[in-house]
Amino acid sequence: MSEESGTVPVPSWLKAELFEKLANEHFGDKYIGIKSFKPVAGLKPGENYSSIMLRLHFEVELSDLTIENVSYMLKTPHDFELYREILKKNNMFVVEREVFLQVIPELEKMYKDAGLEVQFGAKAYEIDAPDEYVLLQDLRPFGFKNVDRLVGLDMAHTKSVLKKMAQWHAASANRLHLKGPYTQHYLQPTYTDSMKDNIEQVAETLGKYFLKCLPLYEGYEEYCEAVHKIQPKIVDLMYAMNTPDPKDFNALNHGDCWTNNIMFRYEGESPEPAETYFVDLQLPRVTSVAYDLMYFLLGSTKFEIQLSQFDYFIKYYHDQLVEHLRLLKYPEVKTPSLRFLHTQLLKYGRVGYHTALMLCPPVLLDRTDEANLSDFVTESDNGDGLKMAMYSNARYKKHVSAILTWLNNRGAFQF
Image (cartoon, rainbow, N blue to C red):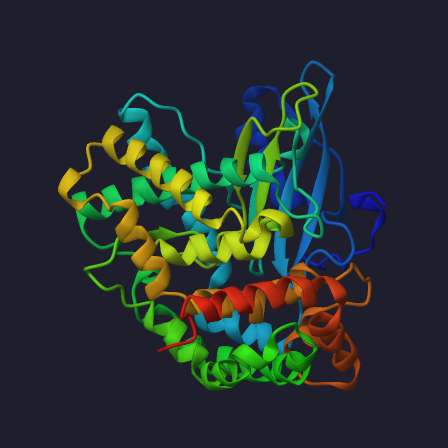
């Protein structure tokens, strides 16, 4: 099924007139007008729970009577009460626009000034929309695409992400060193406090299904008691990371780095990516880099390499981190050693449990047109089957059995 074969609700406010100014700026004196406008589904059915993703196709008429085809990606929220409540408290779409428009350009400029061209994601644009939105450059015409989340990332793709992640962390750590804490409200420790009640509600709902399915997982006798102890505390433990320990190696974390939020470009017939971009940046946080590393590696990689190559991936990331910190002239005395990085991963092993509880279930669930955000995060008759499927399907059981055993052997459930 192609991405555009699915159906998706189109907001009533979405009109071609909203894009007149943007098109005029893009084409300048040659611009005559928008000849046609067609919004279509931006993702395959069952690939997005949290927002409506649309690919916007425009035919633009120019003064030489030619027609130019232009496309953008528009993200806008579902009309779901709990989600709207979270958005109202936290302005998540405003946050993402500001990250693309302000934070990313600053990091990219640091590399440009150091003599290296690094780009982290698509260009972002602003329109006078009456509702929440994020408008981005459509990367598909440039050859970018996602890897199937059900397959997971192989060695080459994982290393490509880790290199870009190391570049991101290095630049933001250097920015923190040079300028001190970010002043943006959404990068302050107290930013997500108003969201905590909603998160606790979601974690409690999902936790009921997770604990109900726990006996289905291989080796559960070994970690059952520890899981039951950490589950009621997991939101508090994750929120504690929002106030960074100054003794940690802290940087701006992507905050939601998993397969569908990463796009790859290829050259020729090569199966290995030539470029890697991050997308979906609604949840940035300044904290230990252990957060991004655990979340990504446990939530996005192929099962065969997920744990068996974990230490190798950390070594590869560390090599890239050190290289780019040196390029940016970050103080060597503050550069973390590989040994210290591993202590960070042990210290914040709770992120692994958070990933298994919250990220892996939707990532490893077979696609279904019926899946929606309401059924995912609330208790309802319709959602009961979805959540049971998420926590009891064969793919999830395989992954989570290995992850929970691994976490338990590392002492990750101790707090």
